[in-house]
Length: 345
Image (cartoon, rainbow, N blue to C red; front, side, top):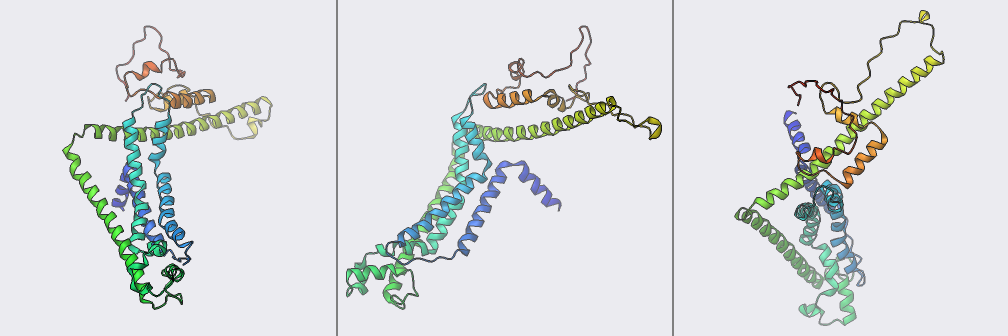
């Protein structure tokens, strides 16, 4: 149980690990879908190619779109590409790195489907049976061209009476399956060679640019995630204070209208809890910055400013840029007051 908890925490803390897990899950789902799919070629000259190529290419397209939707970084990449520059310049290299990472993970499941279909050969036989050159097979010598086309269209349907137990059908089917498997294994070998070269040749080049783009792409993802979490925390705190304010106002209104029972006829009231301060709380925690935004106009302005003008990536310069922005209602200190040297972090 402890190992499972550590593994779950690792996946939750690493966005890249989560995306890799989703990629593997989609690949496994692809294998299951293909193995459970009932393939039925129409065995008609006009529709064989359409059906075979459709099954070879349409599911990979759907899986590719699912991979883009499941990958959170694809939405972050589009937002980073389309956002206004503001106080932070946009780096095209970071966007290219994020696009490459998203495409690599989204293409995994479609490639698995295509390779499975090619190695199995059924889609290829159905799509190209009518395109086979009949001169390569001696069994078609005594047939007319129309008979040859009808026979070739029936090749994927081995139970059809026209081609059942026919050596010519077996020869054509075997020829197309061998061609399909050769293409499938060639693509597999090419992908393995490319992955091997990419992994082996990467250390031979300067890693500075790669490390920088990887760092800032992770930063953009984590920054957006932390902003969403902080907004949720502020919304919860804001709603809590609004509800408390509503109950307090209703209690004052009931007292003003004399709806309270006489204190002698009921139990003594419990002492009222002190209201939380509007500004920074005394413990110095981060909630003081959340409590400073205490109206709908301030929240709307904060969200609009975050979208249109994100702060620069400089913690020293950021406070000066936001000095005239939102009113944080920070507590003022009287002149001559000596501040404590101890600061909570």
